[in-house]
Image 1 (cartoon, one colour):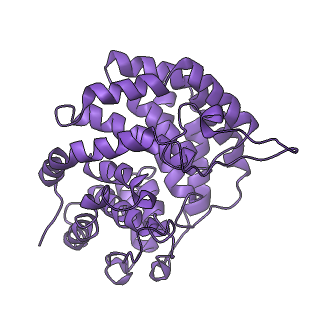
Image 2 (cartoon, one colour):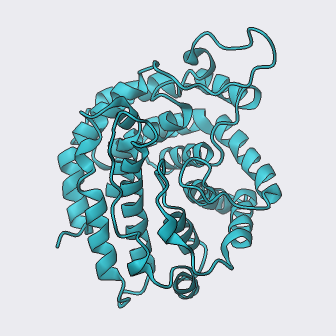
Length: 343
C-alpha cells in the first residue's frame, strides 16, 4: 500500500514544484474575477477595483486565497529553488510586497474588512513567519515590509480571542482550530522575542475550547463545502499545545474509534466548477496533512499509525495533479494545500 514518507514527499515536490509555482504565479496576478469583501457605509462607498484596496493581495479570487498562495510560492522558493522559476517568483514578490502596498493593505484591514477570521489572519502570520525565518536578503526585506500588517492582525487576534466564548467547529474559513494553528509558529517566534501576548491568547483559547472534548462525532463529516476537517484540525492544534503524553491521552478520548470514524475515507468531488463542491479537493489534502502531523505526534508504537499513513496517501495522491488544468474554482487556491502537505 502507498504511503507518504518524507522521501516520498520530497520526490513528489521535486516532480511538481514547477507546476505548482506556475499556476500560483498566474493567479497571484489575476485580478478578476474577484470576490471582494467590503462593508459599505454609504452610497458609492465601494472601491473601483480590488487593486485599489488590496494592492498586494488582489489576486486569486479573494484576499485569504491570495495570502495563502503567496505563502506557498515563498515556501517553494525556499525549499525547491532549483525546480521553480525563481527569478519570476522574486519579481512578483518584489512587485506585491512593497512597503507602500502593505501600508494600503493595513489601512484597508482597519477600514474596510476584517477578512475571514481567523483563517486569513492565520495565513498572514504564516507568510510572515516563512519570510522572517529565512536567511535570505530579499525575504528579510519582504518580511520587514509586511510587519505593519502582521502587527495589526496580531493585535486583532489578541483583542478577539479572549472574547470568543465558543469555537467555530465548521469545515471552512471560520474554523477556529486551523486559523490558530497557522498563527502558532509566528506566535512562538514573538514569544522568543519577549512578546508573548499572541501565544498566550492562542493557548488560553484553545485549552478553554478544546481540553474537555471527548468522543467527537466525526462521522458527521464532511459537510458539502468543507475544505477542512473540524475533528482533525482540532486534534492537530492540540498536538502542538500538549506534551506528547498529554496529547496521546487527550486524543484517545477525543477520537476513541478513529478507524471507524469515517475520517479515513476520501471525499468525492463531483463538480470542479462549483466553488463550494470544489472545496472538497482541499479537504482531502488538508486531511492528509493533519494525519501526517498527528502520526508524528503519537508514539511510534501506536497501533493506529499504519492506517493513518495509508489514509494519508489515499487522500493526497489523487489530488496533487489537480492544482492546474481543472477550473479556476480549484486553481486559485489548491496548490497552497499541496505545498503545505509536501513541505
